[in-house]
Image (cartoon, rainbow, N blue to C red; front, top):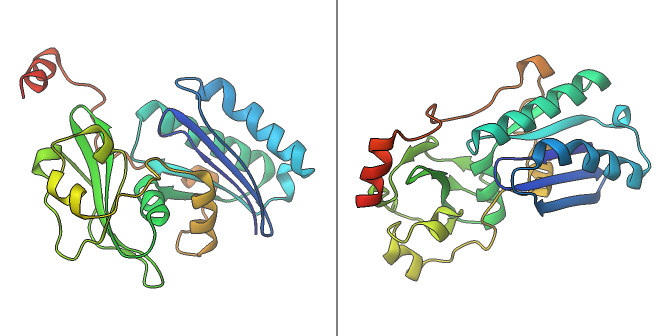
Length: 223
């Protein structure tokens, strides 16, 4: 399949272009410059590959959870490009991406949600791929280690020392702490995710609150 994938859920801009087995990618920290960098980098990838947008089979994007503004940029770009070229969109959760990158096993993913919280979900990866729990959000210290977990993944483990410290010393931690567009390409190729019309592309926020109040910020600092 010929697919373009993008993720702007973190400070990284991650893009990948798959052309029947060949892969071109851009994965770089751009801080808050997703809006100005995304389309030019996509154009560069297409030009480097010598293909047009209309020759692709679909646009894949990281639907969240993640940074609110970043998620909207990815979804908006995916919708706009797909509309213009009459292509379907394929939305994939960011935590699915992290679980895929971790390798084969039972993977607990904890992705930094800011505001002293993490998004988490449990996966069985490999041939019998499945998400074993809903994607949820909670304080790091309240996360419990599910029985049978063999792998840990996500930047929540890097950013919160109180997140399962004993498990981190006993279980392998994936070196891939943020979503990568190449993994979205491989997940989309699995056929597990529906191809939808661009107008039906949806984001997965999990948490609808953007920021803490001043009182909540003070309480978080006192923990």
